[in-house]
Image (cartoon, rainbow, N blue to C red; front, side, top):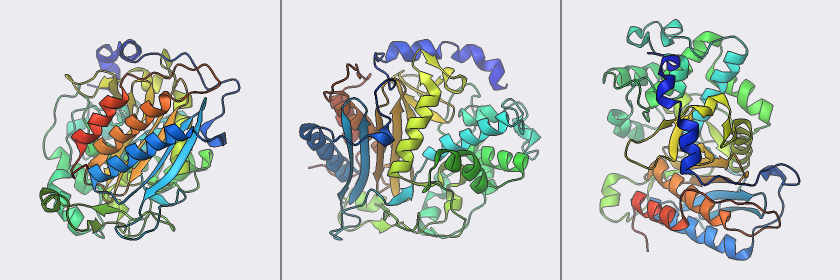
Length: 417
């Protein structure tokens, strides 16, 4: 069953989003600056709260450092390197450093899909088998199903996780992950799934359709049009994320059981083939700020979302219904973005479609995964939403600072003081 045949299931998504979030009365128009044009710092009291929240999340994830940014167009900005680049280094991370962006890559993969649809290279409703004929079991799944996390595909990397961590320089092929995911069978095609298999498969389909590598497709349709100079998909050979990398680490299960004592394993050098079209892209704080802000601008507003995001799926049947998914993104109330991990890094980037409030988080330990980075992003957003400003903006969110603070604790894999 393709996406178009499932429209009834998600027809009320916009109403659900509007009802679950406290709709914001402000906007980024008029004299509101775009995040990249801001130069006014947030008030000292606010930045102290942001710093404290970041340091606590670093403890929770065993991360020696973090690169974070918060841009509230009505109030000011805060961008900082916190902690150390590596345990005992004494070097504060620079906001110019680059890192692996994790599942933010999924958003960019869907950008390529929609761009190729606009160029009439593919159609969103094309069956997957049109471009990957070796998957006959997916003849009733479409390209946009893959982008939306639908189609019942299951996750592929779990069984390989220890192999990946123990062999960071190994070059993988996307088909290895696709075969592993499809080998687990198919689930409910109407239910959203947090599945890497879909994006590995979508990447292969887009490469076959365009006769172009995903590395070049990201450059052509994402990085170059938006001026994202630090954003790219590395070659498959193991290497660092950029020429000025933010070192990355991983705390093993055994180390977590002993209270995260000792130094985590360094994972800065890695083959991006593990991440590919699911989580392989490298980026930077400024690039992700600009990318998240631009995407939120394209999405519209809570009561008038663009088609890519207008029909969304809940990520859980019994969790908060203001957490939804569409178009390769997660939708946290009125904030659109992504969160996730790549060995060495936990990342998140969100921007509010109504106010332009934008948050980017990069923790340099991936042990706690995207849940921790996302919880910290929500906590930083809730703190910034309370920041006073000259403009009359109602920046209320469907979660409180305390709730996000607790979510950080819930995601912790290391002790918090």
